[in-house]
Amino acid sequence: MNLSGIFRLPRALVRGLGYDVVRYSEALTSANAWRLRVLKDNRVDVVLDVGASEGNFGEKVRQSGYTGKIVSFEPLADSYERLLAVSQQDGAWQAVHTAIGDHDGDDVDGYRDKGSVRFRGRRQLT
Image (cartoon, rainbow, N blue to C red; front, side, top):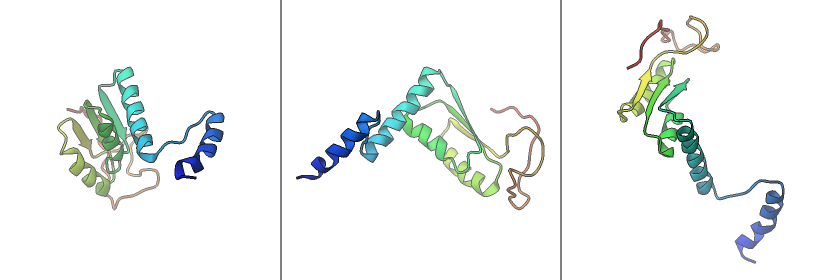
């Protein structure tokens, strides 16, 4: 019995439950296609990435085929520096060194970044 035969029965059982098992590379392609379809169907022309960390979500959005504007917000200095390096390679991706929340302050969910978090007042993005 070859390897594909070994997986046939488990796959049939999983499909009977309404799910499917696919190769990992196919799953990534499916996720990218789904993400792009959601963005297009909802006519999204700006993606706001709040708490962007190092830009992983923005990179996934780009890998999906989205070509519109991305604005990523990250308050922690170390993460922001890495985010900035990634976003500067993309003319439609802006990184903003600030936090987004419902109150002013210098604490981000209990995380401190050696005093480097600077919360700004309302600001217009370009």
